[in-house]
Amino acid sequence: MEYIRVTGGRTLCGTVRPAAAKNSVLPLLAATLLCGEPCTLRDVPRLKDVETSLALLAAVGADAVRGGPGGRHIVTRPGRALCGTVPAELAGAMRGSVFYLAPLLIRTGCAVLPLPGGCRLGPRPIDIHLAGLAAMGARIEMSGSAVTLRRRGSLQGTEFTLRLPSVGATLTLMMAACCAAGTTTLHGAAREPEIVDTAAFLNAAGAEISGAGTACIRIRGTGGALLGGCEHSVLPDRIAAATYAAAAAVAGGSVTVEGCPPDYLAAFLDFLDQTGCTVLRGKNGFSVTRCPSRPLRGGCDLVAAAYPGLATDAAPLAAAVLLGAEGPSRIYDGLFQNRFACAEGFAALGADVCTEGRTLAIAGREAENTPLHGGTVRAPDLRGGAALVLAALGARGTVLVADAGHIRRGYADLPGDLASIGADCRTLCPGENPGC
Ligand code: EPU
Image 1 (cartoon, protein in one colour):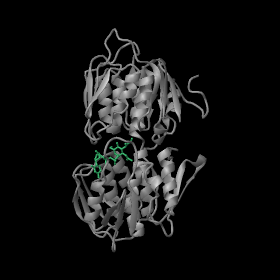
Image 2 (cartoon, rainbow, N blue to C red):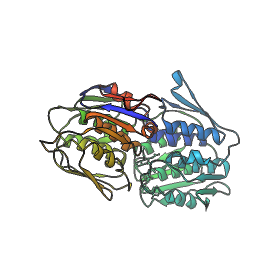
Image 3 (cartoon, rainbow, N blue to C red):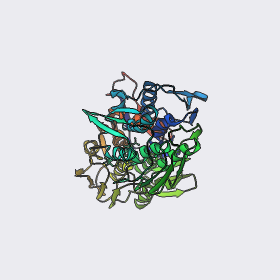
Image 4 (cartoon, protein in one colour):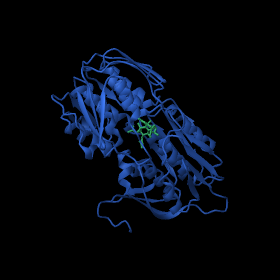
């Protein structure tokens, strides 16, 4: 069991630079299977989900290794004969395994995927991925907890409307359409920056995708031929950027986030403005300042929604900010049923919170209330775990976050990043007594 220990009460000051976005790196690694020439992804962080992806690529017979100075980049070379079956333990280890469906179907003619795992945020069906692939001519069989996809000849371009703007399904169908015969038009597509980044990578490798970042994406397919290769610098992680911004809001002080355009997290920064933080936006970065002696304003009614709305991944982070704000707030997550599993941990630290369906209600702090206290809490999932670490920055006392391994799925070293701007926060060494 991994633990992070945080002692609250330190003001933060400094500059942080978010790593490459996990939610772009994962589809990009899968997309390299569509490339017949070597590809390089630059500055890829050492996240658990990235390591799982490298293991998955190796398991299907692809060649993907770390290279460059300090192993910062990932270099992939086209494998020869690939195997289309994803091992169950790798599929179950992350949601990102779903990104292998389309590339393996194209490369091998038969992809077998045990149903993907990932954070337990509620039901996470893959019906839109499958309906779109079926519209392109894939034959689909469900057996037990695995899905098998087969194709005869190349996939066919099609006109397809997603029933909701799923990020994962948009990526799957964009990848599939790149090597299909004819043109595909996706209506109702997701518009997240990670879609634009994946399209930029595929286009650099020779695909013809237009409209990524809008609800209508057009892809002219190669008719079965593989793409070429390319070098790509992955876009910055906007959720990590939101985490550092939230840290400044919870702990007080001034934090500058470099290398991440504020537009990527505009809704989150607008929310911080609303609470009384000072947010200065530049072209490729921003700063968040909060005077520690001035309480934040609560009274927020937030809705997490598809981009450009408030990101669902940032909803627990917003909750951590609001725990110490004056006045009650509510956050509704329209995407995932169980987004606020971290509420139990917030309550264990003394916060007055409750979940009602998909809504988290936060009583907020009254002027005479004491701040959160120390204690031991459990990270329920990646973003919920990060939210507990944030909440601890504003606690009086020491907080132990157990099950902290979830957090490493998306942040290479969150405690190290926060310590670099002044937080008293670190991962305990294996075998170290969490009680000391
Ligand atoms: N949905 C369906 N059917 C589908 C696909 C999605 O009903 O075929 C539903 C989902 O159940 C959910 C909603 O649509 O209610 C949105 O899901 P989406 O497909 O957009 O999400 P995802 O691709 O599964 C990615 C990120 C998530 C992030 C969401 C939303 C990866 C690996 N995961 O998930 O990231 O929350 O988009 O932006 O890219 C995280 O990083 O912690 C994380 C959970």
